[in-house]
Image 1 (cartoon, one colour):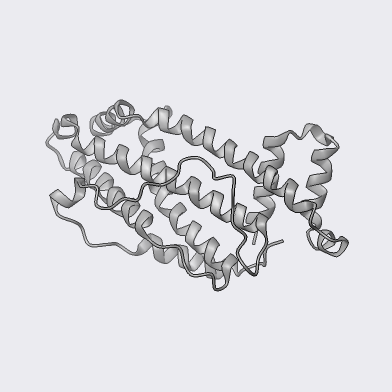
Image 2 (cartoon, one colour):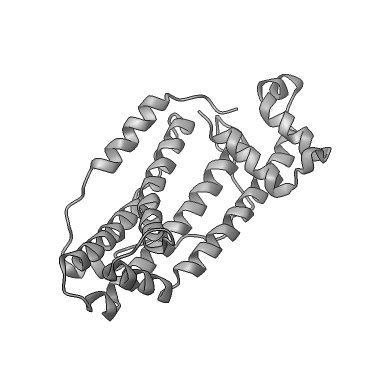
Length: 242
């Protein structure tokens, strides 16, 4: 359905995002909540149709941006709460400073990502992929930090244990549960939007969206045990490919 974009171009742009370091803020700036926007944390069921693309494309991008913004906002707050926790200063070592430094950078990067305006509607799909990709790059740094500290197969240092205990204290496990819940809500939202959208398609349109229609038929005929969540995930996979 969506126009294919160059994987190489997209990968290079993400690499630039990975390797570009922003100036380190002052100690005060690191812990302040400077104009972080209050985002809607549930998917808005009413999506406006922008000129030049269809309602399902709008639902896909706007719903996913909404979901990613929730993750950024909540993880930003957790990181700030952890940095403010007295336990994070309980060990005087370079390793402990590294733990704090990673979290400080995440607070800054996630704030920057939340404050970055969505690009204009020129080349809508391409801009949408890049905009979401940049958000995902930031979120991955927080996810890697969590996984490294929660590892049950690799030994953690005393400093990492302190950071992990602080993360749990300030709600990281509850955050993970909420992310899973909201992702499922987003998938169901895609299904509802696609159900309305598919009724507007002509025979030619259905042929162009063959992969989506095949998945839709499998879902409506209850083939392969495909429930609403599984179909929503399939819609996401097909729509995200490029």
